[in-house]
Length: 260
Image 1 (tube, one colour):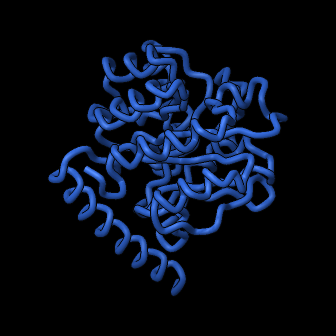
Image 2 (image 1 turned 180 degrees about the vertical axis):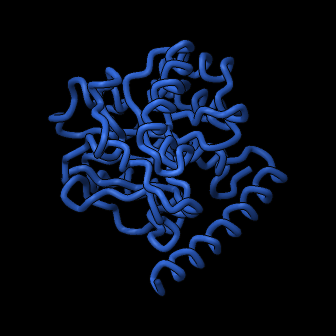
């Protein structure tokens, strides 16, 4: 299946990353020792839904000898012990995709207790050193606000995938909105200009692979949602419908907030 946002196309993208010869770091590696490296990729996956897709992507990356970071939400549909442990065994980093401010409806004391509890659940399965907020466009809260009340050291964490990166030489690209850096459909997956640079909008994964092939950017940070990437046609059309619906909801929400 060669449609964009299929695993066939994802394999092609990973192949182009491999051909550059640049190092590929997990977030843990980056925070520990590699922040001054001259050229690298960071590949991060936010596992929002369908964790079996994450395992498929992890197997592709492993076949190229490429490590990446997988952030798992803690709920019964996503936090699957066997999948998490298989991905960790392949050499990838597992992290916590927290949404505790949403779950606590803005109550920061409750959010702290939920964070501590859910982090312990994941740590019972594998090592957890980094975290990334989940940006639900349908809630009024921003989960990054959690760090205005708590510190990473309180939870023995090395870093957070947004707030801990302060390097404007890194170019960030996300598949939020079923494209690459589609700003109109990206309400919460946002970095400040002073922390990282944002890669210009790219329409297709093939165009992104071409940019990577030319080595125009020596430091790139890719954020990818595994549920968006399919391996057979029925999945692909189902996800296309979900993405189109969610994108229209985001447009309406952005319009509503602008009018307020």
